[in-house]
Image (cartoon, rainbow, N blue to C red; front, side, top):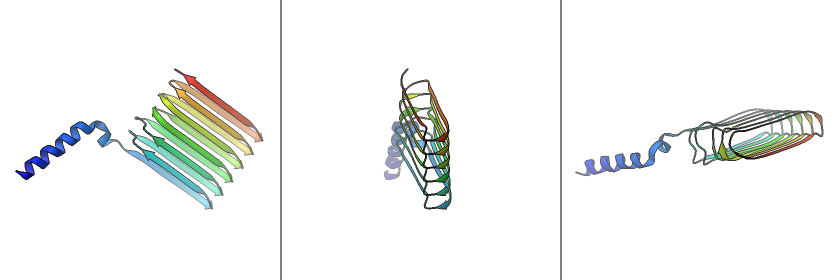
Length: 160
């Protein structure tokens, strides 16, 4: 009798949990050089992927995905010295964030929240460049491409 009750309880738990019980999140980091820091935080997601690759020294990359649906992806590539990247996705579905930085002392912040089909790209080559992208809503697309020294790009998108 106890076996039957356990099987029924397990079946009910799976039935009420729905697809979230089978959702997967993947986080990967690849680093070469010295004193690089990579941090990935994932909680309460559907299928979410975060990848950080760094080559050089003193680079910092952070990726955070919380309460997301399926199809969310954060990719960060940093090559050089003392680059900083912070990418967040919260309450999104099918959000894509890509950051590529080559050089030194570059900063990229990409924040995506409360929407679907968001796409953000920050691409920087040089030194002391800053890119800030913020998206809230659906069907949004933003690209910040910078080459040189001390460029600043700020893109804020809201709406549906």
